Length: 307
Ligand SMILES: [Zn+2]
Image 1 (cartoon, rainbow, N blue to C red):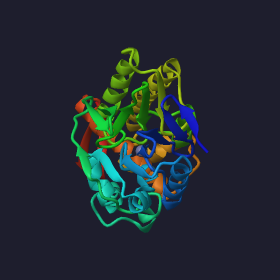
Image 2: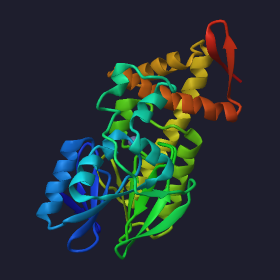
Image 3: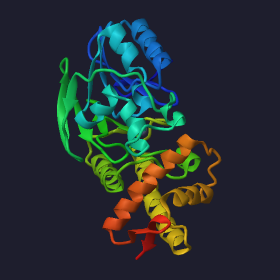
Image 4: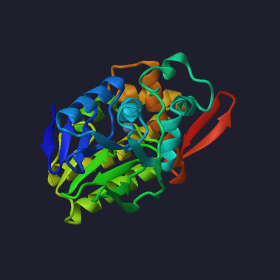
């Protein structure tokens, strides 16, 4: 099952997968879903449409975007394109768990399917700084690849020839925001800069529609509203952190729990907790640079002070 969005075929799901036809027999797959089963579904869809060759472009390394890589690389000898920094994690998925757990052998729950994809080889590594763009030629079809880091270290967005901006996980729907409370990101400053950069692109007249990885494609106006909501969410969380620290909730893990409570997030697995701690840590670094909080080592450990 797929739906046509501009010049792309979108396979909707928990994570949307995008297929851009390059010729009668060749396609570019943008992200490959969570696992081997996603890879199988993509392969079946491609075969039914007559595509026998494919390349893959991964927007970023999170498991739900690269899970089908290994299967498709095996079946189609697909060349994989990704940001050079993201490639480290795509080729060595264990590094994701290892990094989330603070560069130590992770807890068992952090080594499950949710974080550990099968490794795949990135043949073409793209080096861009946040906000930079590159025109990439795929068999005569030119794509604009835009660096939109923040959610992950080197996330890429893609603008197709007909003006569909695939924005990966740069921003989330209201449903995702309320499900997770604190949107996952690893660098708050870059996350905000990328959102502002995407808003600028939407106003530039070359983008006609937006397709995030989670949820339905959006008209320009809808995307703008959602991006502004995502930006205001960051400031809302920043204010909640400052007020929590003033109330004495001054440890990083307590802050993660505090925010999960504030946003009434039900799921409290170890994985969910770590997926909240990471953006909380990113927020603290950002707010420290902005002079809003300070970290100190006290008898009870690393503590925060509101300035
Ligand atoms: Zn992601």
